[in-house]
Image (cartoon, rainbow, N blue to C red; front, side, top):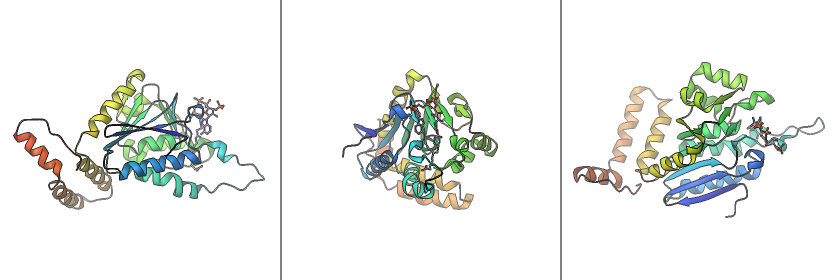
Length: 263
Ligand code: T3D
């Protein structure tokens, strides 16, 4: 399929997805929303894709919803934002958070509104030193969406989540890393190599086990300790029947590097 607003590139088992409307800081219009959804659904279903790297073209990562599609005048009906989120953005966030394979997000510049929260839904967020995260919603009279009110308190605690969501100020990448909002902040000229190396490493890892780890960590937020212990035991039993567990133990016993197949 030909995409107009994103670029897909395959490097062995790694899929690189680049948001590509650089003139508009990769803000998300209806076409891009559809294309991201399609690309992620394909990546999710394709066993040969064992890791995804998400980034943006140009000087921004993603400035959230394309506001030129929301040019509300007094004589026009208000847009149906519930529908836009329910049918457009929420499936993207859900897929990023639950896809049973690792996703690295390389934040190359400003990440605002939905763009910030798309990044936070990924498993590893690595930001360039010059990048900024902005919960821009309150600046235009909206509330954080795309999981912002779910991810932020879990990542940075309520006090910081409140300040981010209710003030809408920019947080620089160094602070975001210090607060635990993102995984790492690296020098601008190291972002591409660093995040590609991490994503390539993850693409060689035991994919099915990593998918199960994602699921366990996600479930832990709603579970008691006994419930989580039970889920770990059940999941470990499944992992213990995998080809990668057999390979991992054999490789250890034979003192060689494992060659995981992702299953
Ligand atoms: O609507 C729904 O479906 C509900 C879902 C909502 C989710 C949301 O994401 S709501 C939040 C939307 N995003 C924003 O409010 C952020 C708007 N952008 C900004 O505040 C600033 O652009 C930034 C802080 C991100 C960056 O500032 P700066 O000074 O580095 O760049 P700039 O000059 O403002 O932007 C550069 C260009 O990108 C400019 O275009 P031009 O004038 O050169 O042709 C600007 O208009 C365009 N741009 C930036 N953000 C958006 C955008 N165009 C459309 N929509 C945008 N969100």
